[in-house]
Image 1 (tube, helix red, strand yellow):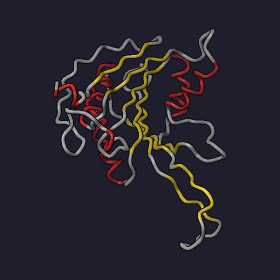
Image 2: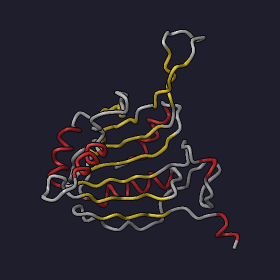
Image 3: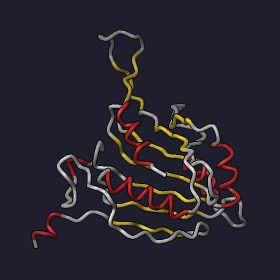
Length: 211
């Protein structure tokens, strides 16, 4: 499982900075994984398609949800792939959330919406603006499976090609905002069911080394 390769290929074709990257998967071996890239940027909306026309509104660039079909046998493989991607792209940390089935008795109503968002199936945008462009033919099936079995989601904010580059105070980064592989952090095995959050911290403030 190489999420970094897929991310690198996509950001090479889209000259926009990233806000965050999320990865969602159900705890079932060899099922597709949904990788979502959250972009920072706006499209100028004009009444007429003329360069000199006045901009009347700014529309946020939709996130890109991609289906990754690499085979995997255990959740530790996905955990390591997300950690390696976050590490090499300069993220301060990688947070892994283990979510329970949203169809279980007593589940909060917002959990169903969070499940849809995780797999790139956000049901509506703001003011009829599309929030996500999904290139995932199996997204609907994954949502139904996640609703019954639970799911895992990883999230990180890359410094490389991200909006965080000018704010990064991290002594572990190279000049371009990346880090050299491999990731040195030992992963904590995910359970795959229930409600649990694990945060892998990579960054080290420059001030900490100065002291």
